[in-house]
Image 1: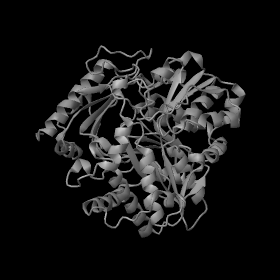
Image 2 (image 1 turned 60 degrees about the vertical axis):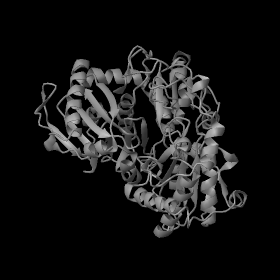
Image 3 (image 1 turned 180 degrees about the vertical axis):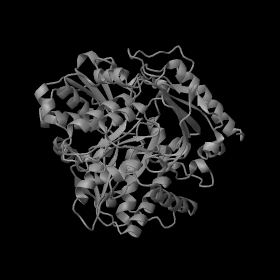
Image 4 (image 1 turned 180 degrees about the horizontal axis):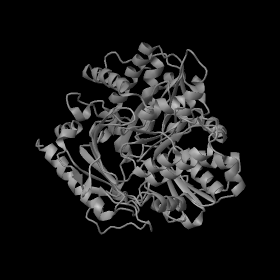
Length: 564
């Protein structure tokens, strides 16, 4: 059983636990680095076999992901997916431009080229970044929404080539329709089925131009300065500037690498980028908890470089490789767990954004901290609780019925100062800047503010554990029913609810959630790996949390064995 340990107050990495790799938190060694030439060669030479499930196109919660080394992210996949997206656009009469972005993973550049060859052959108007600049996910979402604002026809959509914070050997490919956010399952299933059909038929029906010819048909778009110039309409940047806060930023070698210096220059902020190194092997990283290189800004192991600099700045932050996740480092508390900052951020926003609609709700996922529920109750705001996946926040963020949407994995977005939509995909840069705004306006950093929440609402003890599960077991777990939970108490406290659908939108959570007054657990299969996850939280204490985890595992084990 593997576990991501709770982050302690001192942010010291503990390697004495058998659950944590001995290399966790240490600098990556040469032997850990992916062989980039071999990886890129495999992208072009390895041919997927669609009769093997692991080699088919499969859209998880954030697009298709895989590695060329395991024949799960290769040229054939990208050609097939790109053609399927073109067919979807034709079916839906989406005939505006397509905004195409990519991050700094090694497989992003070849996939970018493959996608353009197909898109251009299908007559799509392709918008790519000025100066071949890397393009964060939120910049693509922002561009789509900005272009479509006020339009009745000719809508734009987008593609982002990124596996998010996944290891360097991975690639990713995701589609954002005209609403600017992650595509709904009905869309991704359609694209997935069409793409796999192309793989079965050896790419028959896939249109393609030579790379040089395809590139000649693209158009340049200044994602970076367009996005940056608009930031003053979502963040009170004047307050940050006036405070002269000393800010440190680590882009983790990702797509936001050149954005931060431009933000500092545009708004005259006291902001220093600690490194602008871009390396497709990500050899500058410290190793994550399981011995993998992973650009996760919420991990105390991956974030050691910035954590060690915390006393050099009033506030520090980082984003993952496509800049859709954030990590906030404070002098008072070190790296804040994502749930802590989500609680602080949502409380601040709903108290200070006077132009937001009074009925605008606070959005969270079912596996996010109950501290957020308690904050919402004090604010008198409706809580909108949805399954895992940012796609469930898209419509609310788009129409303003949600002021804020955040998930426990450090992804969030929120409305502009005037209550209108900013992005409908996760944006790691605006929560980071919001942390600076909060510190400037409140006179204390988010770590101090969260400690005040713990005093007022109770101390939260939260953890997530993972264990192997076969595809068949994952299906069983996803179909758990409330009737399979025979217990009436959880860790000595009366069970108040057993849910298999989310309270906010009634959609299946792909598992179940069991709650008491002061604790809960949720069990669900991973959408991208052969594992299941148990999330748990207690406001009673650490021992109570461990008991909840043990009882949760008993329930899950019984379900996986087919017993009730």
